[in-house]
Length: 254
Image (cartoon, rainbow, N blue to C red; front, side, top):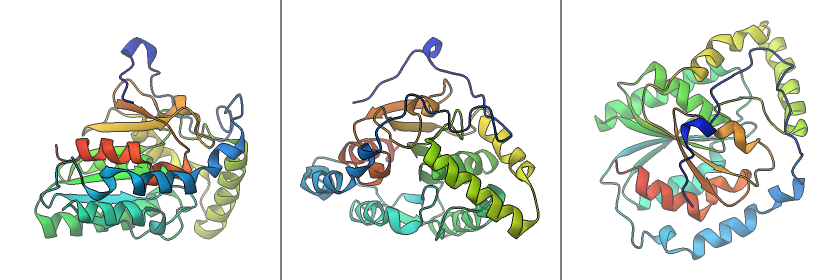
């Protein structure tokens, strides 16, 4: 179901720049079993007419770039890529195998994929990002609006980037230590990225979220400067969520 909360009810971006404060604040904690629905969500998807392109417009060769979430890789969005291909879009994966590196380093590789896809298709590229992938998509679009038509973020905490479940926050802290050892740089390496994430979008952004998200605080997905759409389902299952596919079929042709 789609919703467009009034601007008065939506929070302004308040991205935190340092560990502490809002990190892992998700409260009350959602039961973790909510994230065990991915298999059933996939079954629901392949039973839905949208999966076979029934009753939805084709893509007419429009280019789309897919960016996976934290700790995930391109493999997590293969179902969506294959569906977009059948719908006559020209989907491209990000090249990310394991989404855990500092944002600026990760963006270098994704930007190269975006450049190549834009050159091949000679069209602006729509970017669909899941979770952290939506944050990366928003920033890369802000920096390159001449290359990007729109951003669709799935379960992405665009308003408070680290308002996540404590278990996820523990993984974030482990990733931070790994990055510090690998790049010899501290958390301040994320400052520029987080500042741009908080800025007003340079291209249209749609945030698709679920209130039963077991990983990200759904309220962190809401901002007054983006379109918001609520669906039912899990965080991890947004890449195979039939409602999401219906919304993509409506959004991407524009």
